[in-house]
Length: 209
Image (cartoon, rainbow, N blue to C red; front, side, top):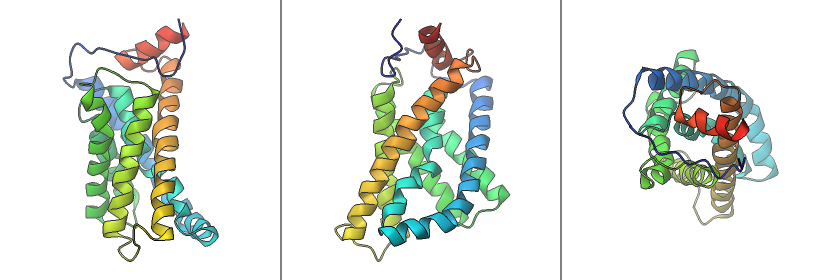
């Protein structure tokens, strides 16, 4: 059977959440939240260096803060999975300590989840593949990029060099990190057999076996 990354299609008999979905989503949210919390400290010194090289360049790595939504969605394959995993992730970050305001991170996480769900909502949560995951990453990148322009980068014009570089790098990072990276991370997890109880895991194991 073909192992093409873009060939995974699943028709789910039910879109209702069950206990396993909730537990795995929480585990993903906690794991991603810890990674994102750690990245907060890395970004504190890395982003100024990147911005010194090219203003707006740091946006290339913003997707590390929102790849959790697309990852959760391609694993759980239920409506609201991206929102759930994102919100659990930011809750973990807030418990561990976060330099950003509570309202900013929770509203941002929820919006990122909503935009990540759009491509899969259009397919009625029946199709999951690399192109759709990349599109989800792109949509989240656009949402987050404009969210920052409106609420954190108010002095930066969209059509200024920094604004253009910011949005461009945000989109590239969203596609590569929240899209491609999330898809292949999901496949790597599924290949271990850890997701065999899920349709997502069985679809990948079927390709590998």
